Length: 181
Image 1 (cartoon, helix red, strand yellow):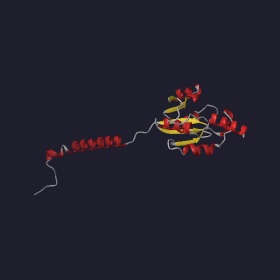
Image 2 (image 1 turned 60 degrees about the vertical axis):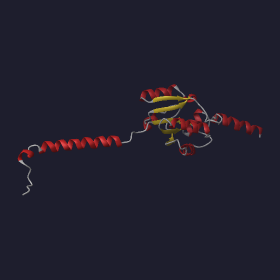
Image 3 (image 1 turned 90 degrees about the vertical axis):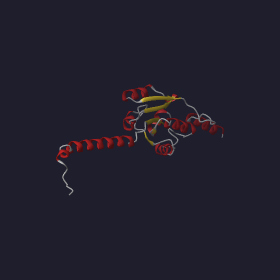
């Protein structure tokens, strides 16, 4: 007749065998979880005024986004006014327009003044700070060095077939046209 008890020689191996099987199952489950866990995409940080949004901005965002998840710090109105001139569009509108561009993962109003992006860098925790050559500043390099952030300087290059654009040149053209008109 069948018995529910294992033979006596098997019962002495059962605890060790059970422990071994459970250990193998745990390692296998951990290994599968590690393979399934998606890696965090690299975070890329850019900053700027982004007033009079144009194709040059879009090309810049596209180039930066090729390196990872793009976070854009849009200059607050007080800072844009202090660095350049009063913006044509208020900060909320500029954040909305920048955030609507498909290359941008997250757009927000900058917290700092001048070229101090420290608070934004600490909040976003990017892997890369991406700037155009005309946005390259020693203070930005220093802030990145202090935080272990890679600093990448790109060349300003328009998308193929398009003219190079800058907000400054567009504003100058508008002012000249207004004088003529």
